[in-house]
Structures are given as C-alpha cells and as structure tokens.
Length: 215
Image (cartoon, rainbow, N blue to C red; front, side, top):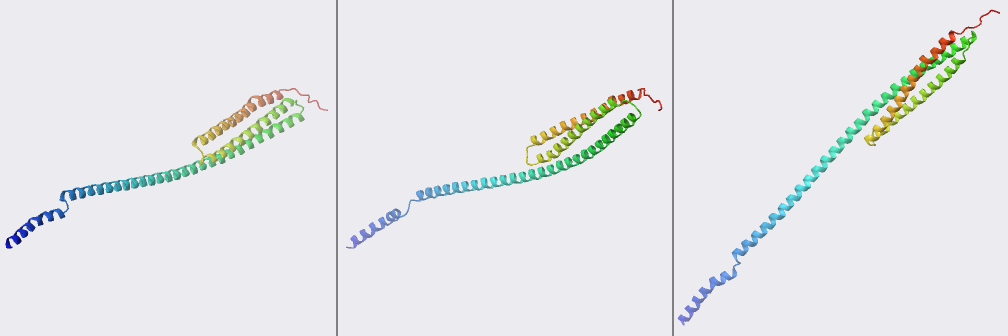
C-alpha cells in the first residue's frame, strides 16, 4: 500500500513540470509577436511624424507664398501710386505748356491780323497775307486738337497702371509718346511757316509801290 502511494506521488511530481511547461505560453513566440507589434507601432509613428512634417512644410510654404503675394501687391500698389503721381504731374505740366503755346499763337494771330488791317488801310495789297493768316490759323487749330488728344491719352494711361498687364500700360505710353511727337511736329511746322512764309510775304508786301497821291 505504501509503495503504491509512493509511486503515485512520484508520478505526480514528474508530471507537474511538464504540465507547468504546457500551461506556460511560448517565450520565443511572445517575443516575436512583441517585436512585430513594436515594429508596426514604430512604422505607424514614423508615418504619422512624416505626415505631420509634410503638413508643417506645406503650411509654412503656403504662409510664405501668402506673405510674398501680400508684399508683391503692396509694392505693386505703391508703384502704381508713384506712376499715377508722375503722370498727374506730367499732365499738369503739359496743360500749362498748352496754355502758354495757345496764348502765344493767339497773340501772333492778332498781331498779323492787325498788321493786315493797317496795311490794307494804307493801300497795300494784302491778299497773300490774308491767305497766309488763314493757313496759319488752320495749323494752330491742328496743333490745339493734337495737343488735346495727347493729354487725353496721357490721362487715360493712368487706367492701365494697376489691374492690367505691364504690356497694356507700356502700349498706352508708346501711343502717348507718338502723339506728343506729332504735337512737336505741329509746333515746328507753325514756326517754320511763320518764319519762311509769312515773314517773306510781309517783306514782299512792303516792297509794293502804292499810290499815295493826295486827293
């Protein structure tokens, strides 16, 4: 009886470690699973960090572009204001010059007209001078119209300083310069006509022989 009990006890002691080992989870498998989980967690973290960095970089880039655009708009606005101020000054200057030219031409016409009247009263033939005066008036009218067109174009160029392409603005300035050139040519033509035609005809008139026989 005692021997049987001893045998049973011995067998039980032999199976306890085996049972314990059977009940314990595999250590290597646990470590591999834990390692896989750590790797996956690290991958997720790296992906998250990468996405955050990309988002930060994109936000910084957009902010930089926004600031650059704001600065560009500010500089453009300031440039437009400076250009408009220069154009306004130029318009004022040429309007004053126009007044000065027209006043001088008006005085010239009056002097010639009065000279013709006086000469005619003295018996001179002033037919040629009257024709000269008519042509001179036409040239002065042309000058006046061309000058007004130029100033109008110059004023209109202000509308192209902002909100339009630089090419449009430059195109307006090119047209304005072309008109100003025409104005200068008109003024030159008036001077030359007076110097080379009117004056010569005045001299020719003075050389006329008139009958001053007293009544």
